[in-house]
Image (cartoon, rainbow over all chains, first blue to last red; front, top):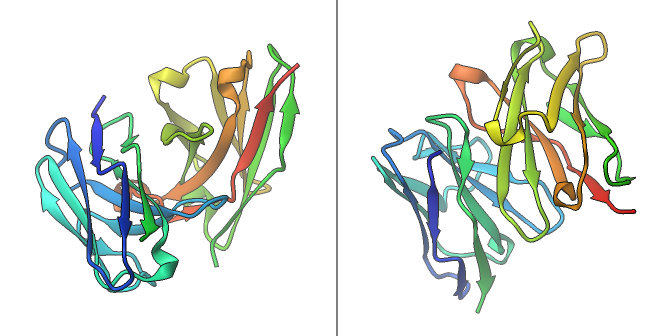
Length: 107
Length: 120
């Protein structure tokens, strides 16, 4: 199975700050990577697919980048509604696997 | 608009089985893949498998072979997941999620989740 290692596990940031979350795959996943946002008690919501494509309706302050085994999610100008847990997921190989999540809180 | 409506909370006894449902609307049920994903309390997400309702084909995460069985009813646009030989380890929230297969293997639409609690 492809192991997805996310960092940091938790993050505290101020409103308006820029935040970066990293995801490292145990092997090359050829940009077959998605990012999801999950708020407490809710289902995950797709933010980014194919490593850097913004899902329809997602604010442009979210962006994704990376290739090979290293990927990142960037949130510009952090808003209060961005408080959530973020997961990366690879779909290059079965079984699909997720990172353990990054919990983002406001400072 | 695409909607995935899951069945309600289940409280079940150890060693029993449970079948949860996911009713799809707003798109062609038979031309898309339905996936199931598990989220244990305080834990991350695990992919269980998918079913293609158009022909009933399935693909499972080996970890869930023998634990989960995926089916679909085309007449009601409903996907089902049966979990068998339940233990406390199976207590979790289970989500259904739609993908478009090779045209879009990511999960753009999710159900609201079904909480399964295994307890005597």
